[in-house]
Amino acid sequence: MRSSNPVFSRRGFSRDNGYAGFNAAPQAGGPVAGNPYAQGTGNPYATNPYAPADAQVGAPPQAPARTGVMTMDDVVARTAMTLGTVVLTAILSWVLLPVDPANLGKSYGIAVGAALVAFVLALVQSFKRKASPALILAYAAFEGVFLGVISSAVSTYIADGVVMQAVLGTMAVFAGVLAAYKMGWIRVTRRFYGFVMAAALGFMLLMAVNLLFAVFGGGDGLGFRSGGLGILFGVIGIILGACFLALDFKQVEDGIAYGAPREESWLAAFGLTMTLVWIYLEMLRLLSILQGDD
Image (tube, rainbow, N blue to C red; front, side, top):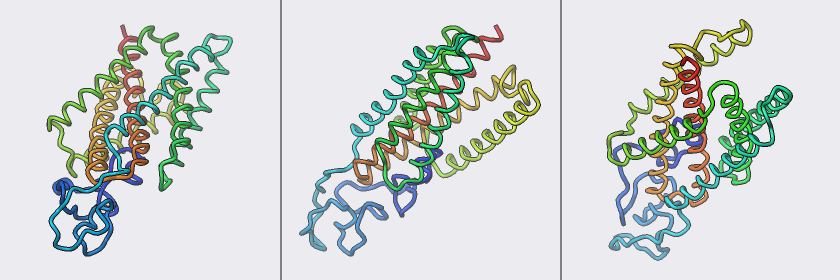
């Protein structure tokens, strides 16, 4: 299975040197068929790269020494660091890059530049074979600059107080999806993945077309960013973000189950951060439209 997240879609935590299946779960204390972190030998213990070196064929299963592998604590810690960097730089850019009429052009220019740099850094990390903490934190810092200026502008010129509402909404979506995933209400299957990816592709194409019409034709393009259509597409964007979260949770769960190396937790943090940024931006846009129509 591939995740919707470009990080996970490049190099997921899974088996078969690619992507985990949905039915074959790893068995505690026993061999895990197809584990990409296992060693391909005839020894049943070789399905776990951390098994004892003197394990013999036919010997009774023993609990593997799980050292140096990714844990949920690792994912939580790295995600907190990455999101914390986004929040910190967003606050600093809000304070240091005012969006008053005298500085609006300069602030917007810096925000657009930061967004482009963050995009390039995200692409570079997505195509790297290993996680680079420095690269990931740099992405988070530039992303925070962009979010800080955009949030300040929306709060100043469109809807005062909408930023906190968008933050709370993003947290609510994250908590809701996590709870639904853990309780089994959301089942990540191949059909689910295919539907989400098809919907995401269509959504991004429509947004790109709308942007082109807005740039060359002026106004709001095809109307996907305001009014009834804007509200509809804002809701769709948030739902897609929630689906991305479910796919990301599945990939993290597989990484822990299959014994991914500890440094892979940085990839998990990177992917989750990008998904949460997506949800926040869609939430901010939707709330801005709703309050702007009041």
